[in-house]
Length: 293
Image 1 (cartoon, rainbow, N blue to C red):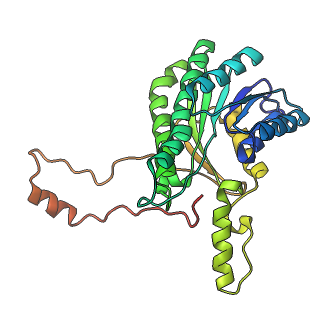
Image 2: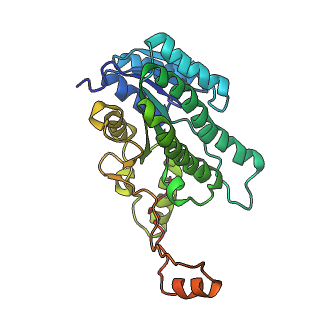
């Protein structure tokens, strides 16, 4: 089923793992794909895999932390395929360390790739999409950006920032027919192996067998890529500004931030009145996924 026939797609960070699965599955669905990565050997192998899947593919090496690479990626898609219909901001790195121990370099590197790279790729893609009359930007986020993650101040801040980009782009770009959505994949990749290692250690301490990734709610990259194919297709054209989670078996939408417990007064509040008011208000519960990737 060629649900992406004619679509011209750029996927950052697509030389391995989930990004590679996105590229292969989108190519199978009929898309022409520009892939990207920083490791030449892995990028070449991903290019072969996409070509074997029957897709047109161009590989561009480089880090999206460099705005010149972001401009080159979008320019390559436009030059080789005649335009860009979908940008998938997937590139990312992790440098996990607690707040007490995280260095400036570890913070800056993660922010540069995830957040600045998504911003720069989004900028150049939006310029091209505006000229052609529309397009779709998909930011790949994480539970950490929604709920935080231990040892992930940098990663959580970057992913939360990508949601901020999306919400701003919703305001700025809708008039040009450019949509933006967020996709939270829950997949078995190199970046999530720490979850399985921790679960295996906990199970061993209890004398139990290690749980399989599927038991923990993680799908394979190929399974999870089906959600990306759907989101990039015309079947999801009514979605804009949404945050979708998918693990191959479970899918859900996240609610949008909104005010609760609104209370208006004709005169300004005093400190004492605020204290009396909030003494009867139960704080909003915090959501924490059982496992964090």
